[in-house]
Image (tube, rainbow, N blue to C red; front, side, top):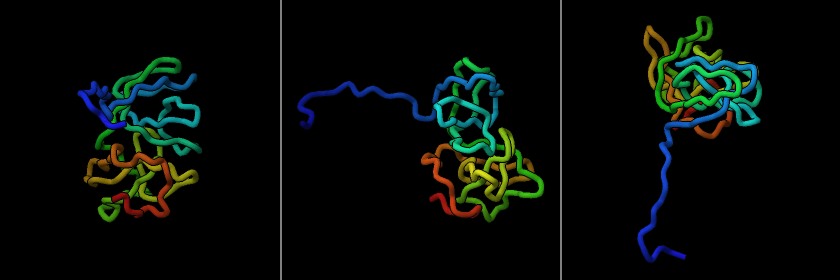
Length: 143
């Protein structure tokens, strides 16, 4: 039934997610953070079943809560598998929780959409990439 009066529609800030950190793990402030298949926050890596969520806003250990922010963040570019300007608009992949690479590795864990490449690193958009599906190729278009 359609509204016939004002409605108090609650909102959460979509760029912020609070998750419990998996037991035995530590997320450091600034880390590329992922969610595992059990719904826990973990440092991003090439581990099966992970989906990158964004950047950890503070340090947290197993059992603690961590605030993760979605957005565009600068991460290291992996020597030997560099993300290049040709990747802009396509996906880059997780090497570790502070490094991204240009081609898919064993589990094809997508870090996000490449928004820029500089001598300092790669600007990775973790807000645009939301479905967790692996891209077919390193240069696959994300929109």
